[in-house]
Image (cartoon, rainbow, N blue to C red; front, side, top):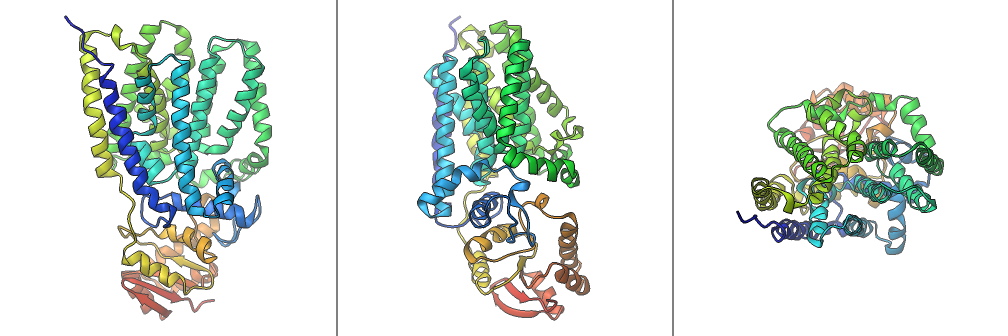
Length: 500
């Protein structure tokens, strides 16, 4: 029987997904001139952190959020430090962030070509690997729409270390290893906390396959990386681990245990990704027949099983990693196993299944992304009215909670410090705030939801709150509390607190 050809068909997925990736980058390019204020948007907070680095400096108290906080005591700084020179050259914070996004995708593409070259992959498999890892629907959602660029940098640092380990898989460690590993490990430490934790599983696998002499070298190189990162790491450990700030956060991985209509797609997707990873690994291992492969990837395989059977939410530290981060991390290795398979050695049934995957996956991925991942939204009357009213504020303010399809209250808490030099008792990273301050914010929002004027006044006074921006029903409630109305535009209103 004639074998089913796969080689040329491989191009279908990269061509379709890369074209779609470029289309989504063009769509999000509006952020280069217009601040993102819509939902599904972490990018606004990262833009603010670049601004805080400029205005507040390193490890200084910054008064723009939470009535004073230390921005980099609680969040990895690498992305902001590396983007700062672009900001310095362009003098435009929005353009700088968009340029950094493009550069991250270019670096990812170059690293994909490098790993492909080192592993003797054909060109079509090189671009297939890039597409599967960096142009999949989850990457587009996380890195383009939500703008989680620090996490993107973390994934790149893991890929960089992965390339180094593959190069030294069967080699003794030499001086060149120290030269390339130490800065790569430093980047991993400083890039993104969740990716940093997962990246250490890869290092663990490398330690397992090496002899004691090389293990000592890896540990020694890692210690140097830790020392070089101490300018940030010491404060992070002090304020988050030793003082227990992380313990106040609800485990993010508990989302794996939520089975609602909204979470159905995520749960199905992570299950399919893990099954794809395990099946691809089995085929890859059976072709290579090298037990070191099992030892090297054993931490990744164990992690995938812990996620598959939903045990991960009960494991300390790992339960603070978001489901989407697990998804993207595991896709990296699933994609590697898949492109390492020699399709010519497979029987026709398995080849037929792969052909169907390569035909169905490109269009299914685009359809899912198109339906589930919102595009950049232009300002509506709500955003224009909100900005107009923000310009009438000259002191501490807050945007009261509310859900509007085109407008995201936390994004205004990033916009106002940058463009209006305003401060707010609110912010984007609760872990940065004092726990009592967070309780007061919760009490304020509860007072609004329960329409309790007395509690609103008490908590607004605690927060030293001068102005409140509100929407729709909240405007009616504030009117009942006899708070001074400054102005109202469309469904947006601005009040000045009488408590301060």
